Image (tube, rainbow, N blue to C red):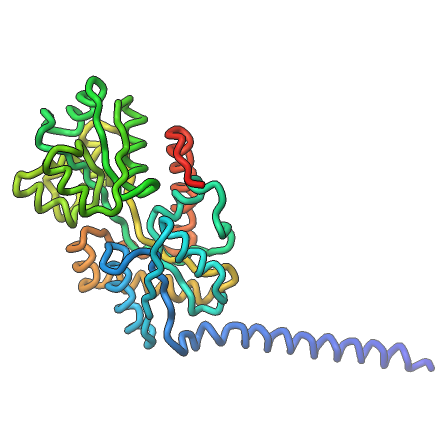
Length: 330
């Protein structure tokens, strides 16, 4: 009986060592999927129509990502409801490292625009801020203005309208913020897509528009419309003669759209980090970077933490704009 406590202590020690070994084995096992990942094709949902800017950028970047990872990235377009349909599908998908979604800044707009979303922001985790999309201020030739400052002064005296591809679109939010901050008498005109806006801008039915360079810029260069400024921090390398909004007299007015990637909550962090690092390598490669510049995008490739910071920042900014503009979608 005198030896029982000794045997008990020895048994407890053995049990502790066994549990410790199992824990270490479990840690090694948990890390193995990230080292082996991906072992099959990855699915990336693009919540917009094929051929749009988000779709083109996603295909350009993830073709390079797939080559680096040794597995193809399958793009699946799920457009509708300002991206919420595709985002919802990803939020409800297995968090196995094979489901992701490509989003625009509209993702942060939707958190305040919709009274009730079918998902919570906490259902998704940030992976990468892939690229920025500078927004240029275009104006109709009929307006007697030569720069953004003159347009703002004109808009304080005369009613203006500004177009966007739909309520809650980046062009809507940027136009609303600029009108609010400068006391413009400006009415938002939502369109069903971007194509009809350009025709009305050239004819003078639309007064102004914040939009990426890709489609309107050739018409500005041919003299059919005016381009007055860009709402990015620095001048766009592809159009170095166009001033920023800050240079044009609007301090602090920096408001890009962007493309980023999200994953379902619970996706293993080592996989999130590995994909984020691979995206950064892809977008900063000379070939992909040049393609993005041609499309009007600026390559970024952030860490997950940096992208989450951008999401939080833009969510707060858009909430203020939406609240003041009294915009909502039931």
